[in-house]
Length: 102
Image 1: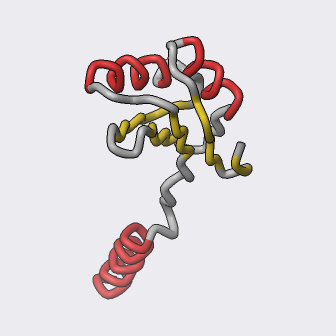
Image 2: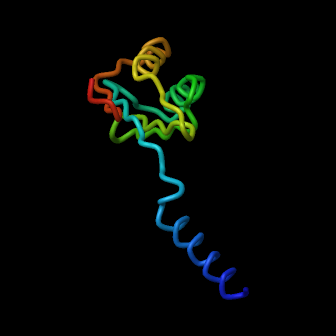
């Protein structure tokens, strides 16, 4: 009995650590014409977090980009991300999503 429990725990740990059970959802990256200051990056991230399905936003000033991670088992509309960036006063130049590059 103890052997079965130990084997079951070992398999569960192996599956969790290998990512088979919980894969990271694919991210979307928006590249902007300008993203110069930390307060601008924070403003953009705050707006993008309001898009349905968005779990996390990380901005990169050097790359002039925002990386968006969706909530588990959710898809985020590339169009909604693009429009949100524009409405926040930024000019997207490229969006790389799981469904393609725009």
